[in-house]
Structures are given as C-alpha cells and as structure tokens.
Image (tube, rainbow, N blue to C red; front, side, top):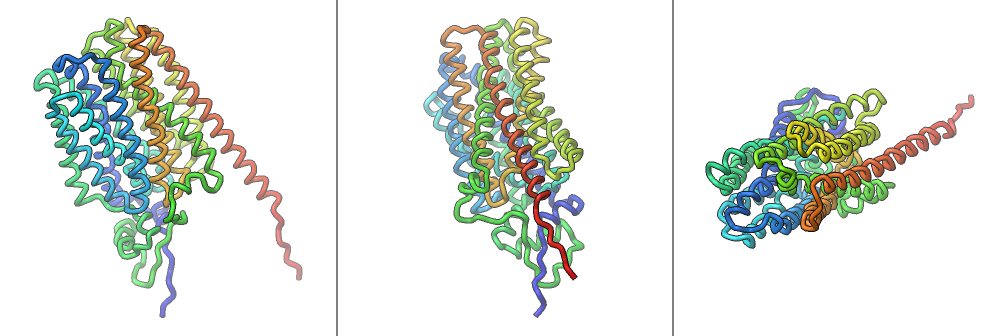
Amino acid sequence: MAPTREVNISRLIDTAPVSALQKRAIALCLALAILDGMDAQLIGFAIPALSEDWGVAKASFGLLLALSSGAMVVGSLLFGPVADRWGRRRVILVCTVIFSVFTLASAFAPSMGALIVLRILAGIGLGGVTPNLIALTSEYSPARSRATMVTIVVAGMSLGGFLGGLAAARLIPAYGWESIFVAGGVLPLIAVAFAWRWLPESGKFLAARGDHVAVSKIVAAISPQTDLSESVRFTQDSVAEAKSPVRELFASGRAVDTALLWVVFVVNFLVIYFLFGWMPTLFSEAGQTSSNAILAAALFNLGGMAGALSVGRITDRVAAAWGRSDGPRAAYAVVMAGYTLGALFIGGVALSLANSTLLLLAICVVGFGISGSSAGIIAIAASVYPVAARSTGIGWAMGVGRIGSIVGPTVGAALIAAGMDARTIFLLMIAPTALAVLTLGVLFARERRRERATLAATATAPVAVKVD
C-alpha cells in the first residue's frame, strides 16, 4: 500500500500563481461586499425623504439607526461561529438572501414600527455577510498579497456606499424613497444567484474539516500540476479547534490583543456611523444645501474606498520591506497613521463648514483616513486568528465593534437635541479617533516586545554539539 503524502493547501496557495478559481472567488466576494455596503447605508440616504413623507422629525430616526446597527452586531456574533462550523460559502449565501429580502420589503413599510422591524431583520443578514466575505477572501489570497486583497473587498463596502449615495440622489427625487430599497433588494438577489453557481467554499476550511474529496477539486483548479494520483492527505497551517472557536480568540496569548482590537473596532464604528447618520443634518444646520450633504456622504465613502486600497497596498509593501510574510506589525503602523490623518481632517471639517469646497475635500480625506483604516484593522484581525477561528475572530471583532455603531448615532442625536452646534460636535469626534491611535500604539508595542522576546529566546537556545 502506497504511503500517504501530505499536501499543505496553505503553502500551495502562497506559492502557486493566482488561479482562475481564486480570482473568481475574490471577485464574487467583492461584488457582494459592494452590495452589502450599499444596503447598510440606504436608510441614511432615505431619512430626509422619509421624514418629509411621514411627517416625522429627523431626530426620531435615531432609534431606527441604533436598532439596525444593533442587529448587525447580532449577525456578526451569530454567523461568525456558524461559518466556522458549517462553512463560509453557505453562510454568505443565506445571509445575503436575508438582507436582500428584508431590504426589498422595506420599500413597502407603512410605518416607522414596521420599518424598524424590517431593518432589524435585514441588519442581521448584513452583519453575518461581512466577516465571512473577509475570511473567504483571506483564505483564497496568497500571503504576498493577502492584506491588499482583504482591503480591496473591504473597500468594496465603501464603494457600495458611494454608488448608493449617487443612486439615491437620482432615484429618490424621481421615484421616491421606496425606489432605493427596491434596488437594494433586487440587485443582491441577482448576485447571490451567480454566487450559488460560482462561489467556492474555502479550501482551507475544507482541509481543516477533513473533506479531502472537495479539497482535491479545489487543489486541482489552483495547481493543476500537483500530483493527486497517489494517496494524499490535505493539511493547512492552522490547527482546527472544532469545539469552541470563540475560545481560540483568547488562547495562545491572544486575550489582550483581542480586547485591544475590540476597543479599536468600537471606536472605528462609533465615528463612522456617527458620520453616516448625522452628516446631512449637521451640514444642513451649518448652512449647506441638501445636495451638498448627500454629495459629502458619497465623498466620504469614496475617500474610504481609496484609503482602504492604499492601506492594503502600503501595508504589503512595508511588510515586504520588513521581511514579514503578512506584516501585522506593518499594518499597525500604517493604520495608526491613517487614524491620525482622519483626526486632523475632522478638525478641518469643523473649521470649514461654511466653505463647500473645503468641506467636501476635508470629509473625503476623513473617509480616506478613518474608513480606510477600518480596512486595515480588519486585515489585522484576519492575520491574528487561525483558520479554525478566523470567521469567529473577525465576526466577534466587528460584532463588538458595532456597539460603536449604536453609540455613535445615539450620541449624535443627544448632542443635536442638546442644541450643540455642528462645529463643536465635529471637534468632539477627534477624541475617540485619538483613542484609536493610542490603542493601536499599545498593540504595536506588544508586537515589538513579542519579536524581541522571540529573538532573545532564539539567541539563547542551547545548540547541540556533535562529539566524535
């Protein structure tokens, strides 16, 4: 009987040229991320028209924003562990159908109460899709370009917000607020039909589960020259922990890193969702036109997309210069710089509220720094956790982080209700952004200490001497 030969799918993906199967998987993840990002922001675009149509004060939508964000928390926390047990592909398809159906139903909501229920249900699906798109992208990307590929998919969410803003500016005046929910429901359903046919399951996940028949088909597509004629056992670099992927978030010295990552995610979502929810209102109060307010939201997303792409590329280049294969330490440094840039230009927004040109430029740079950096921290999370807990790690980081997406709009509503002016409110947003920089600095310092400890242990390790 021929001996069993091991094929490490992680190393195969890292060393082989990028195959058509990998390109197709990442392209489909990008398309779904664009639609996910668009649907997540539709309610923000619809609030002015809904307020006028239903005769409801804009501040009253704060509860809707908070609850829909809370539903995304539930989706991220729920479907991350589910995907680590049942697969990324299955969860992506199910969650996309969930948010598509309930977004489409939102077009027919007769009241605030009904709309809240529908957005909560859609939010659960939206929260479940994101971490699994990122995990699947990460697991089909070679180490040499993993940060870039992950951040391209994350940038797709910002692109979705940008395209959604442009579409809303045209559709709402012509066809009413209902039209954007129809588009936001139908387009993902079309995309999920393509994903059902063409989106593959993660080969690393299948290898961890021991499904060698399915893995062999994926390996044959990625590396046709690999000999599969003999008895082969497929492996991947991470050891699977089937019983409790949540426990892996705190194992092997990851507890402090997990807690600090969660702080950064909370701050990130707080600032971003504050801006998503209240930019139009604050800009209107500062004397800007409604068209400029919608354009500002679109430019914030455009800046976020450009920032995400830049952060990923810069991270990969810095990592290569430092001699690291995936460069989490490089990502810390790059993301710290991005948040610092965002904090500075939030101040620029506060000081340029009366000047449309400077305001639009400043808010675009804020998106570049803050929303772009959010792609960087997601890439860090993807590199911190092993395959067996990667969807859980990303899902829980994004789920806990979305507490900030509840707090941000709620704090904004309270500050507006208290009569605080737009300039002061924007200046206050510098503080949480600075906290993100400080927390990332601690993560950076921990990474450096670990490297020094590893080098010291290597240097002092006893060397066996052969005696003749």
